[in-house]
Length: 310
Image (cartoon, rainbow, N blue to C red; front, side, top):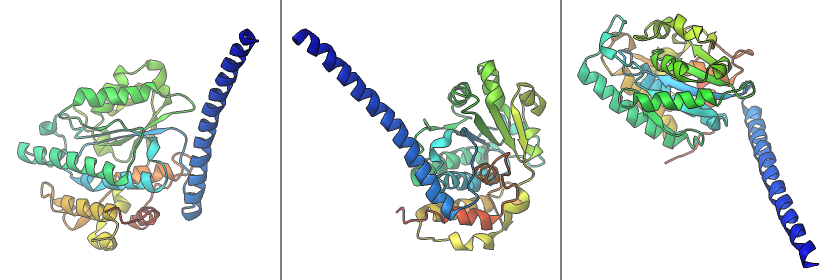
């Protein structure tokens, strides 16, 4: 009897563990679905595609718009229950900012100031709008280009037809190019690259936009988001000193960018234009995503989960 009992105990234990693991997976899906359904009731436009997100910004180029846009992007994901989709975040992707091709240039002192501000706001944004459970860390490409590239390579290599990677190109394409070059070739076909402006596409010092496309990625050009999301400061008066510290932080960062002074075209304007790519993605991406968001639409999402975060 003892000889027969032991295998039965082992089999019973195995089945119990297997069922427990299966239940955990099912519960995880159920909870995510229930959460999305709850948000969908408040925000009918919610319709994200399958897959994960990587966000690559500059902010160390002459235009400071990424300072305002980055916390907005993080908040959009948090407030729509999509935080777990973010798997890569890097800033200062202008790898050689002193030969920038734009009309205006940035000097070494201001470029370092921008790096420091982007480090600060990335950490603060993750703290305010997290947790981002599938985000290892954020990366400063000027300080740790190798780490940023490898993190993006790993995200690309994890891609499949059922789990593609959507790369939001909110700055120069060079880091994306290096990562695509180093990634497994059979994975690149499952990578989407989203752009909203040729000023980013054509600003690479090491990769042309055509070279990025030649890797075999799927390209999505959604049109200039400055049209709707670079505008009067008054559009954001509602966020100033808001009781939700995340929303107040967003206003603070856009105000910082407006006062930055390196370029004249942001004076008297708040700009979160790169966040338009995230809004397009959460509202359907290439399946009818909204390419024409304004502060009004962004506000609707930011207020979905407004609380006093402290």
